[in-house]
Structures are given as structure tokens and as C-alpha cells.
Amino acid sequence: MKVLVTGGAGFIGSHLVDRLLAEGYEVVCLDNLTSGTTDNLKHALKHRNFRLIKGDIRRTRDVWKAVKDCDTVFHYAANPEVRIGIPRVHFENNILGTFIVLEAMRKYDVRNIVFASSSTVYGDAKVMPTPENYTPLEPISVYGASKLACESLISSYVHTYGLRGLSLRYANIVGPRLRHGVIYDFIMKLKRNPRRLEILGDGTQRKSYLYVTDAVDATIFLWRSVEKEYDVFNIGSEDSVSVMDIAKIVVDKMGLKNVELYTTGGVDGGRGWKGDVKYMLLSVQKLRKLGWTPKHNSRESVELTVTSLLEELETG
Image: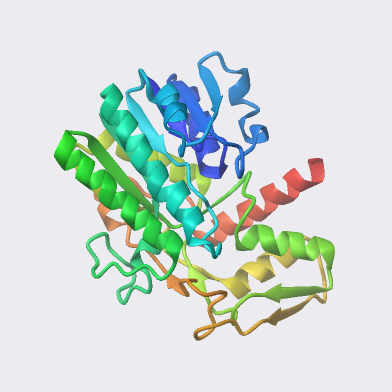
């Protein structure tokens, strides 16, 4: 089987590429290499069943070239920064890009799509752990809104044009190759100043973190298991960890002493920034009922990630 991974040079996408190649699939990767890098693909680039196309999901002909003759599209290309304050960036990279991918699939009769959605579609959920059927879905960031719009587009193409689709609402996925988010930010801040660490918000923000190998396992499992034309699944751990605890883990793993941890106080009741969901914990009961459970909890995922990122930064 030949599959396309858009955004396959990115963080989650590159780990997915490695797994698909290891399991014998022919893999095409489409990436514009703005946030993804060829370093993430150093193993894949040596594989005879791998092809990298440097292109952009916002350009129709690039997508046509990548989609043709594929059986499934794993759609992971997107702007990954929730904090970015330019709505047009999310519209073009996430919503417009997804529309172009779906139109290319329709043109070349590619029937299956697995979409990397996000926990941010829930906004400030009043129920935690938050199940997939929670309503109303009220994203509080443009990023979250763009992911929800993409889910709706995919659902409409499934029901109108006979595709099969999966939308996977990921918690905070962490692990090797991560180059954005709170863990990476803390490490880089402490490398610049090992005596003082700024924490955005009031430090009580608490969210679920999942190690990337677990995320990829769940993704492959659902792709092979789900028989419905269209379905939505949460993918996350079953607990959460606070931003302050993450700061302490990073300080400890870096072997630092007497570091001053100070909070900015944040906005809107202690959020790190406008649009930051302060508390997030996804229900994974729907996934568990199919027979899958994560191997690592949130704290273990953070600890493993800090260790791997420090090793990567050490070796360059």
C-alpha cells in the first residue's frame, strides 16, 4: 500500500513516517520544510520505499503530484503554533490546505484520510475528562477554530463524495524532535539563563501530555480498526500535569540548582496567552473500548521528552 503523509517532515509526521516504513508501506511525504526539517527524516531518506516531495499543501499541483496513486492520506501538514496571532496563517495553512488536499483526493479517487486534529477544538470544556461527544465545541483560539473547520470539511466530503475519514483529536504530543511548546521553551530559556526561568501564566495550567510513540501507535491502531465512514477519537493520556511541575522536571533533568521560577501572571485568569486553554484532559474511553491504552502517563511522557531533547541538543 502506498500512503501520503502531508507534513511528514514535522514532529508527529516524521515519527509516523518512520513507523509506516518499518511496517512495509510505501510512503510519500509532502512538506514545505518551514517547521519540518530533513533532519527529522534522516532514517526515512535512506529507505527505498520513501519519497520526499518538497511542496506546499496550499499549491494545488504540489498536492496533485503527491496524492496520485496513493491509497490513504495522513494529513498532518499545518501551522503548529497555537499562539500565533495572524489568523490568515491558520486559514491558509490549515483550512485552505485541507480543502486542496480533499479536492486532490476527489480528483484522483483516493478514498481514505486520517486527519491530525487537536484538543483545542473543545475550548474551555466544562466536562473533564472531555469525551468526543462533548458540546458545544467553542474553540478559543484561531488555531482551534481552524482544526474544527477542517474536521467539518472532511466530514462533508465523506458524506458527499464517499470518502472514509478519521479525525484524531490529539492532546499535547511530546517526544524526540519536538521543537515547540512549553518543554522545549523551558529548556531553551534555561540554556540562556540557568538561574532564572520565566513561566507564562500563573503556573497552575494543567494539561494532558502523551509520548509520541504512543500517539503513533494509537493512530495506526485506529486507521486499521475503525470501520465507520467517519469517526472522531481523542488521543491522549489518562492524567495531566501542571506547567509548574513541568518547569521543575526540566530543572531537575538539567541538573540545575537554586533556579528562580517566576510566573508572569498571564491573562484571563492565569492563561499563558490569549487563546490558551488553561485546563485540558481528554477522555480516552472510546479508544480504550477498542482495546488500546497508552503506555506512558503525562509525567512519564514529559520526563522522557526532556531527556531526549537534551540529548539531541547536546549532539547537535
